Each structure stands twice: as structure tokens, then as C-alpha cells.
Length: 531
Image 1 (cartoon, one colour):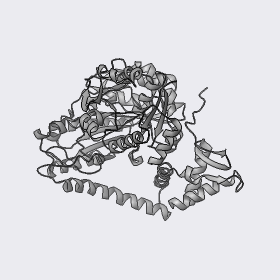
Image 2 (cartoon, rainbow, N blue to C red; image 1 turned 180 degrees about the vertical axis):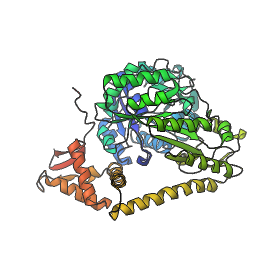
Image 3 (spheres, helix red, strand yellow; image 1 turned 90 degrees about the vertical axis):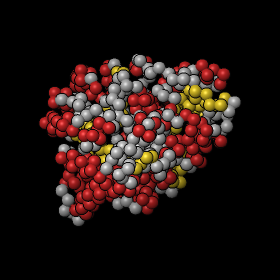
Image 4 (cartoon, rainbow, N blue to C red; image 1 turned 45 degrees about the vertical axis):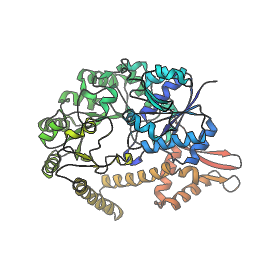
């Protein structure tokens, strides 16, 4: 009998625009390639409750359960593993991901229910581990693990980063509830490389995937793109730490997209000192309709302090070239950096406004594994909490000698008030029939997205969509489903009806006869035939 492996995608705020979880999909693919029977239990796009988890575990009866997490949702992920272990003590439990990789002792000490951690880049470690999953005597011989033995925490040592990324199976997205993600409408993430050569003190990524950039074969990247498009996906986000680190390779990718005739839109994270007009125009021609620049600060000294490795002139030039090439650009800035003051915040506000592009502010989060956290005494910065649930970049969890957390939050709040005032006016104009068509479309899309959040996070299709067999016709169940959703959510009946009907037409939700009832349910992946 093959080993049964359940992999948890832990809850993550839908407001943060999560993509189908890439790390989970890679890990699932490795287990599946080794002959394991794998199930992804996704609580990103469905409601989590302990009772629901227990029911799913009893139905699947896994031998192993694992989860990944970032710092923000680590407590929720670890609690799910704890609940699972207590419910089925014979299961072997494991966790991986950036948070536990840089907080090994804290994790294993706080959660005795976790049997093992996979530290760092995990695919090759898991490949070596699979034949010995149930043989603890072999664990010390496998690099990249941490576990307890006789009350002592054992760390087996670092594993060399994977040289050949194409030796890893493609992400197992077929195990994800792709219809739910399609309903959510966010881009699907893909990587063409791993690694970042830069040394930003607030970044955790290079510690996980190294400073040397390792590239996948362009042919394999395009094959994966084709698989993604086969799900009916029309938007992809290239989630490389630095997509434009090698311009020759970017050219090769763009030309291959054009050669294969792929029709999709895509975006990428890029640095202001790695783009030029020619490369941006080629990206545009290949379907790129957005790039995101992490500029972080409008103060030159601050950029040097955090080792960002860019200048403000480079940022201005990059934005100008995007406008000339016809690619929309977005800039992100970080507040609460070491030595932040009212003056540096003013510099950042003035510079961000001067670019005349969409931009946003995020609070510094000193994640485990970052230079700023590990060398905190070298900086004008104080970390105020280790409550990991607050590590979401949505509030100030640091102070500097010049700024309190209230000062830092006040700066962002002033920006948010301006945005909110404009938005409220746009909504009023929409409701009163004065809005411009493009503004009304944006408002309608916002309300629809809020409804979709409720449908997914509260399992409303499942809880509202079951009816006695003889109480209503098949067609009548649509109206009854919509009526129940309207009653629970308070959303406009027309919006609810239109959204549900769109999902039915797209094949995301379907009606089934189950025992003595009719029940609406989400389809699994609704993959389309590409032939």
C-alpha cells in the first residue's frame, strides 16, 4: 500500500490576494512522484474548523500530515498540525517553509505535536526522506531535517541548494481546488528561477533559496505555462525574486511565449536597476501588463542603510521607461526601517507622489532569518512583539529612536484616509448614478469580490446549497441557493444571482443528487480540453 500523505494549505487572508500555493504544490508533486497517495487539504479558499479537519482526516486516513507556512500564518498552521496529531496520534507530522526553517528550536519546543521539520529548500530533502518516513533511525543521516530524539533537538545540517531545478517535478496544481481559485480571480504564480543576488537586510528569501540565481530551462517553464492555461487561467504572476536578473534569459522567455502563440497576461517583480526600454517593450509584446518595483524609501541614506542597492534616479528612470513602453508600473515602499524619522517618511511620501504611478506602503516586518532581526543591535530599531500573527505588514511592530509605532502607523493612516475618501466618493457616485462607466465597473468588481470572499471563506455554497430531493426542482434550487446567500451576507440580490449564475456557467459549481437531497458543490479543477 502506498503511503498516504495529507498536505495542509493553511488559512491565509483572501484580502492579501493569495495565489494557488506554489510551495504546497511543489511538495505535493515530490510526494506524488515517489508513489505516495497525496491529498492537499486547502483552507485558503475554504473555511477551516477543527471539526472539518477531523472529518477530512478520518475520510482519507493519512499516514503523514504536513504543512508549510509563512510567519504570519504559522500559528494557524501549527495549531492545525497539533489538532490533527491529537485526533490521530499515529500520524507522522511535519512542517516546512521559511518560518520554521529560521525558528527550529522555538517551533519544536512550542509544538511537541510536530514530529519533524524540513529546513530550507525542501524538495530534495523530501525525496531522500520518503523511503525512510517511518524509520526514525534513518532521519539523522538525511540533511535538512530537525526533530527530537530523547528530549534533545537534532538538526541534521544544511543541504546543498538544488543545482538542477528541472529535476523537481512540476507543481501538482491538479491536487488543488482550482475552480475555487478561478472564481477568486487572482493570478497563478510560477517561478522561472530561484535565488537573489541582492543583500536587502529585511529580506528572508535569499536565505531560503540562495544568492546565486538558478534558472529553469525555458522549455520547461513554457510547458508549465501551457499546463496552467489548460485550467482556463488567463493571468500568471512570475514570482521570481528577481525576474530581470538576466536580460538575455528574459528575451528568450518572451520570444518563446510569442513563438508558441500563448494568449495570456502576466506580471513580474523587477528591480529598477535591471530594466531598460528594449526589455520592457519585449515584455509588453509578450503579454506583460504590469511590473512591481520594490523601491522601499525615498531617502538615499535609508536605501544605503538597508542595502537595497538602488538609487532614486534609477527608480525615476525605470518608471519613465515603463510609461514609454506602455507597461503599467506599481511601486511599493516600506515604513519603519532602521533609523526612520519624520524627515525620511516625508522624503518617501514626496518621492512616491512624484512618480505619478500607483504605489503603496507596507510596514517593516523583521521576519526570522532576516539580517535586520538577527543583527538588531546594529540598527536603530526595536522589535516590539514576537506575536507571529502580527507579522502581516499591516501594522507597526517596531519603533526607532525618532518614531513610535503610533507615529509610523499614523503616516500610513493618512495615506489610507486619502485613498478611502476617494473610494467612498466613487461608491456614492455609483449608487447615485453619477459614476463614470470605468469607475462603476471597478465598484461592481469590488462588491463582487467581497461576495466571493464570503462564499469561499464561509463555505456558503455548501452550507446553503443542500435541499430535500422532493422539495424543489433542479432549476428551482438556484433561486433558493441565492436567497439563502442573500439572507446571510446582505449583498444585493442581483449581484448574488449574477455571480452564482456566472459560476454555474463556468462550471465552477454544479448540482448533484446525493442520497435524498440535491446539493450544490464546487468542482475540483474544471480543467479545459486544450486539444
